Image (tube, rainbow, N blue to C red):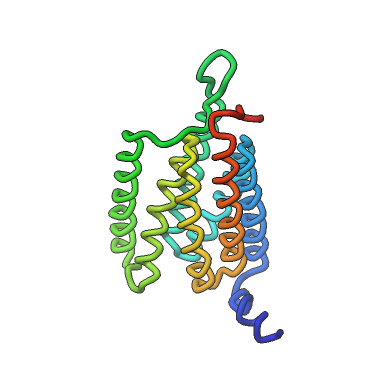
Length: 210
């Protein structure tokens, strides 16, 4: 048991109490955000903004630039998504859940490859392109950028990107030494699966519940 505990949490010996506390708080609010997204509720955005704000600070301190940019982007897209989700499409209804259009598919592809190039340039600029982790981090960043953009636009396909990105992130964050965050992404994977099923069931049927 001691060996298992050491494997999972030994790296936290070098972290301050403040860093550990902030990571746990960010994880809790991250779970709340994903849960509210699954439930199709507007609280997905304020809870997500709290989580991402904390993670931007921590990831900058830990020099994980790709992850930091993901969370900074999440914060910006949360503001955009909050507006989209509450925008009325007519006198009584707000923006509904919908499927991605052909035009949006092209935009998603552009976002994916543009993100790959941008993150690569950032890593090279700061001389952080030093291991396989940088490659994986770049790919997951691009996946999550597209997923967040689709979620902000209330497209059901956002869950597919979250599922893939979360699955990759579980071992990635564990390898990086962030066990709590790794557990977070494991939980996110299951919530994303149920989220996709819930959105599919309620596609274009249930209006936003504020």
